[in-house]
Length: 151
Image (cartoon, rainbow, N blue to C red; front, top):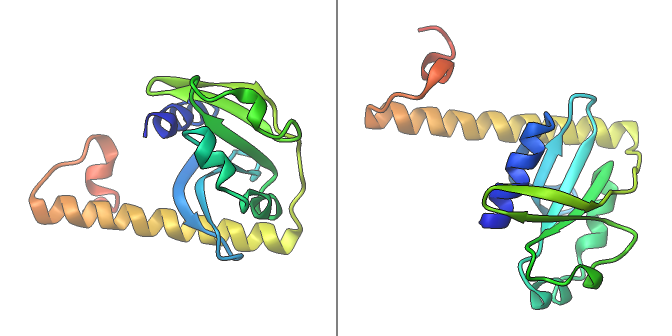
């Protein structure tokens, strides 16, 4: 969770909206997927140990679903175990640093459209669940989220 928190903070500062654990059309689930202001997608695969990385052979499947791909880990995992051809982030509870930039890919138009819809629907569904939970519990949300529809 510390790696995730740091990555989320880093990408939010860059203006990237994120969704965690988004199922993809391939059947895989992205640890984190982000959408930037230009409509480009980034997928971040979180690896908390050497064993976690070595046990994962599915990560190349994510490349067909993003413009940028990164591994994210913490400082206790050696950076050299990760493929040099992919982006690398080191994170902790408070933030993250990109050690190696991602190569830029390019999604096909139909893939981008389908992924944008999947991303938007997942984000909207999750927000509605949060609002319903808070409403049922009689809790107020900070700022403008308390009543999005104005009523």
